Amino acid sequence: MAFALETERLIIRLFTEEDIPTFIEMHIKPEVNLYLPKRSPEEHRTFLLEAISRGNVPLNRWVMEEKATGNFIGSCLLREFNAGDPQVIEIGYSI
Image (tube, rainbow, N blue to C red):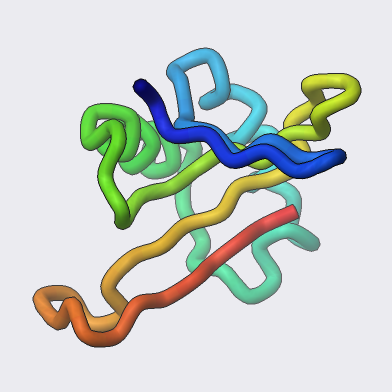
């Protein structure tokens, strides 16, 4: 079973390939990327395809969508802050 977390108003779920264009459209906006590394659309596509291929693992990227409408509202992630050091985990999000 694929990971999903639901609240009264929010669903957090695994990315699918269908989510990639919406994610890229959101992340090419300067106000979204103010504190994020600048990436090309192809770089975004590449790391999302990697996230999709990892599937149901504890450290990954997920879609955040509005439960009532199914609208994409952002993404979140859990990852090692320093690659190779599982003791320190980074929580990230973009909305």
